[in-house]
Amino acid sequence: MTKISLLSGSYSGPGGAGLGLLNFDTATGGFEQVRSYPGTPDVSWIAFAPTTRTVYVTDEMAEKVGAFTLAPDLGAVTPLGYQPTGAKYPCYIRLSPKGTKLAAANYGDDSVPVFNLDAATGALKADPVVLRSAYQHDKGHAHWTQWSPEADRLYTVDLGHDEVRFFPYAGGSFTGGPVTAFALPAGSGPRHLAFHPGGRFAYLWTEYANVLTALKREADGTLTRINALSALPAGFTGTSYGAHIEIAPNGETLYVSNRGHNSIAVFAIAADGSVGLRQIVPCGGDWPRFFILLGRHLVVANQKSDTLVSFDVAADGTLSPSGQVFALEKPVCLLPV
Image (cartoon, rainbow, N blue to C red; front, side, top):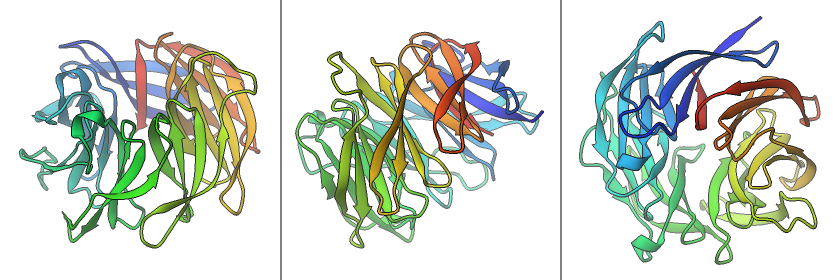
């Protein structure tokens, strides 16, 4: 039996313990709750810097991001302080490849504040560089941000302005932008993007349209469409919102979650980067905000039903329920440490 330690994030309310620690059993797909960490409210996304053992979290409802030192035995987190993000609902954070900066996506507008980090402690420094679109800022909804695999651009997905944009990056600084990398039809609501492990492709997932778009990465940083498919069954007439996306490490299978339809859709990735729908499976709960691949398992965080549900992953990437369901209040993110 092998256990993986997972940090969990949840909406806990002001003053709550939104950050917790779980053990995941890779043999059975089961869970056990180890502890919660006080003073970590409304953690909707987590990042971890192994070198300084710093855990970074969003406090989404208070418009802040925070840093904590994680003890070697995982028994406690020591506060390093919070910094304001300058806009409402910071919902995503990402460390730079060298671990010197932390970028946050503010859903409340189109802004992405990028914080410098203390090299010794990992603490967040004040006065971030704030990256924005070229449009009316309060109409935007930044929902995702990440450096390119080559670390030469910071990409942002803007749900409000229906586009992916990037900011050129060199020598630890931003050197231009914003540049539109890919534009979608109005109302599509792009939410998250994932880079293919091979580097040639990227995959964009929309919240409102529930459409997955396969993209080719061009040398100039722009993205061109390969194909696009719905993640909902033909004939579905209800309301559903796309949430999370993840690609298997071998680059052959891609997963997305549908909130409302309450399902996980499984896509095959072809050699040319195009996608084909392979399976749609019920998520085992309500409102699959997040999921994570853990070896031969996929774990879904169902926000509204307060459950974690694990699935077995077959050799072809398809899913089947493991039978393991774990109660956890409003789970919205998980991260191995």
